[in-house]
Amino acid sequence: MKNKAIFLDRDGVLNHEIYDYICRPEDFEVLTYQIPPLKKLYDEGYMLIVITNQGGIALNRYTEETLAGMHQTMYDIYAEQGVKFTHAYYCKHHPTVSGDCDCRKPKSGMLLEAIATYDIDPALSVMIGDKPRDVEAAAGAGVKGILIAPDEQINYEEVKRVLAL
Image 1: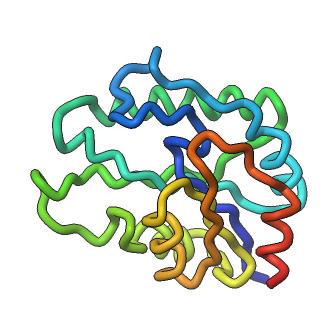
Image 2: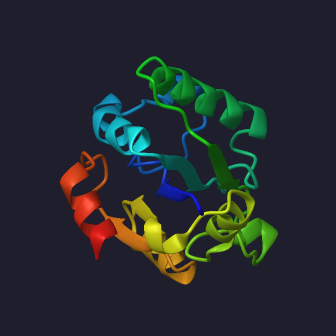
């Protein structure tokens, strides 16, 4: 049987949106009110997979090591509540520096890689993001998308309703 997943944009969904690159760990504020709805989904057997554009790496605004440290902070906060992320995919490219790539949202490369790696059924999965490009990337991978406002709490019932469609 294939796996099911909740794909999550990072900035504005899992951490506070500052409308700029988050370059320093002290500026990385985890939205802890997302833990209860995501714990319910995790407890129901959904993998939690982060799908995030991190073009600030290509722009030399921060390093992959800094990014890894921020993600570890988030993992630790969620783990204290019994929630585990399966993986965090990130696109380190930026169009002005790296040119075109297949992983930067709105392209679906990161989702397609996760689907293949973890044997995920796109029809049983959803992507939650705060920008139209998140939903567009999901659609390109055959995954349903939910658009929320930046820093809006994830609505568990809405996720379940979309998954049932």
